[in-house]
Length: 87
Image 1 (cartoon, rainbow, N blue to C red):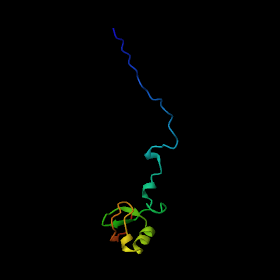
Image 2: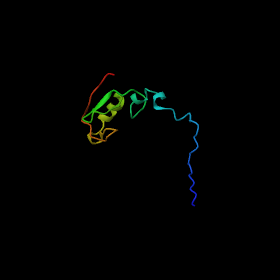
Image 3: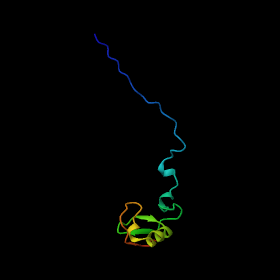
Image 4: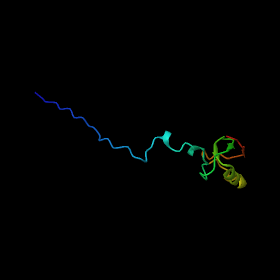
C-alpha cells in the first residue's frame, strides 16, 4: 500500500509596510500635478492627442521650442497646438 502525503505550501504573511499605503490614502492631488515640473497643476491639453499633462509654464516652454521637438511627454506625438482649461 502506498502512502500519499499532501503538503500544503503556505507563504508566511508579512506585516503591511508603511510605504505601501493603498492608492486611496495617498496624496489625492498628486495626479493633478504637471508631468514635467511636478509642482503646478495641469491646465493645458495638448492638441491633437488631447493629453492633459502640463501646466501653463511647461506648455509655454514646450511650444516655444522648435516644432520638431514639440512632443507630448506621454505619447510622444507631435504637438500642433495647446488649449487652456479651467478645472
